[in-house]
Image (tube, rainbow, N blue to C red; front, side, top):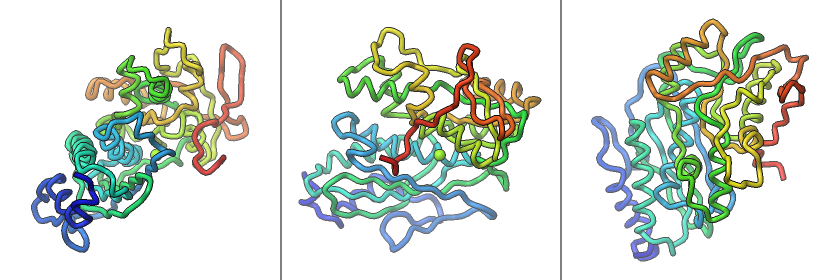
Amino acid sequence: VKISEIGEFGLIAHLKELVGPPADGEIWIGDDTAVLRAPAGTILFTSDLLIEGIHFDLDLIKPEDLGYKSIAVNVSDVAAMGGTARRALVGMGLSGEVEVEWIDRFYAGMRECCDDFGLAIVGGDLSRSDKLIISVSMLGNPAGRLFVQRKGARVGDVVAVTGTLGASAAGHLLLKASATEPEALIKAHVRPAPRAKEAAVLRRFIPTAMIDVSDGFAADVGHICEASEVGVLLDASALPLADLTGLGLSSGALQLALSGGEDYELCFTISPDRFEAAAAAVLEQTGTSVSRVGEIVDKGRGRVLLIEGDEEPLLAAGWDHLRV
Ligand SMILES: [Mg+2]
């Protein structure tokens, strides 16, 4: 069955089934707005726009994975503020030729991510569009009044990152070459695991600045430096590179780690006397490793990458969507 056969209102009624029944005291899909119960104080609010041909290629990603990823990238942004994602609105532009079965699989993926991280889709909007467009807006709760900004890194702070870097970009290259293995690398690209649980542990150790790695590690560290008005000294040999040996990819592990993007790891800065305890707690409570990869230095020192004893400028050759 195609969407054009059931129409917008038929599809909305169908989506209401797919997102499940509303939480107590709330109204989700079906009225002019959703009604949500809010905690006192501040909220976190973000959105992410995904456009076919720019952010994803329908030949390379299954609808379940695309759904999962659409939610996951927003969960990651909320986690990067030290918060917990709670409610999402999903806007979609789609062609009438899309099969309802595709929507079912896409929503199943979104639901799976919502269930993994304890949140819900409460509404959204639909429009006809030649290309598939997905816009997810996410509300989250900070931990009390605490949230972690990109600014706040201080000279002498440790620079650290969770997990591994470059796996998602490697997975993307593999998919474009029609490879189906290694599964872990492909999964890193099509079904990223946002570091929400890790953020919940980390925030107790008061990171001074934090960002999720979406544009590419070099670019994202650069965002922290920019906002905090500091420089950075990164040690290339300390970066947690994805293992790409024997894959014959056109880009090396270091290059993909620095500029590949879409890793959705957390990059943070923290006082050196708290780093070891924070890293140990994250590993113990989530199973995710945390690597110490450099230190914050004076702004005048610049952004420097140490490679085998040589100092090179840290170039933010990551994703800049508005630059050609
Ligand atoms: Mg972000």
